[in-house]
Length: 316
Ligand SMILES: [Ca+2]
Image (cartoon, rainbow, N blue to C red; front, side, top):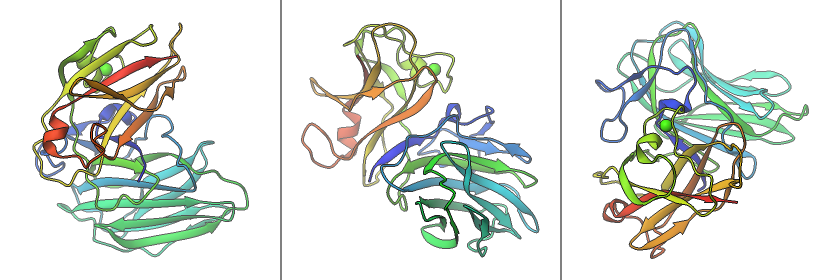
């Protein structure tokens, strides 16, 4: 498993869209709110997500339907390559999800799965495969394949690079727990732990309050290679098997000596730095995944997560 990005922050979605923290639209034990995708909204992930290592990209999200989609054909999810070419999409056809692959031609699959009626909550996983031969999409509802399509790709469309939730002519729905990976996401859930307090390091201008505020107009900033900032995280109180800890950030480059950043975990008195992420002038999403606790190379536990600070290291 390699998680490319994981987010339940409205700052990662265009608009900015509205959010909702009431009712069953999100799982409040995991995320502070759901992203609201209202009638006639065309929202999208801001910028491109990190590329998969090969040909396959998975998207995971929790979808809560606010009002029934019965008897409408609408587009709700799109995936594009780095050049902006649409690769695949999900429509709703008479209440059911319907996959389309958009290669040399648009091939529409057979609709299926649970009906998107008011009150429905569905764990959605979407598998996109792009090769020099074809483009395919498989859509899973609660881990079961419900609709798929494959189209030829002799025209050379590239691997998945961005996606968007949309709602052209449909009815209100909500999404949360978005995970993008280059391996199977079925069965994963996302629990977001926000930076809540000053950690061991304060060498950057600004800190935890700018990092967890869901606003891209404020940020932690460093102009000195080697400087660190770290934050205490919200307490994890769930009981999941923790498959990984993922640091998701958006970063951009201004002027000076700093050329990149490492996500870093501080456990005990040791800093465990992730790979150096080169930054670009444009804000973009980046993530670092730790599938095991780096201090002992063993599986994560809730206690271990709660003893970990999340930080950033400015790099050359
Ligand atoms: Ca901010």
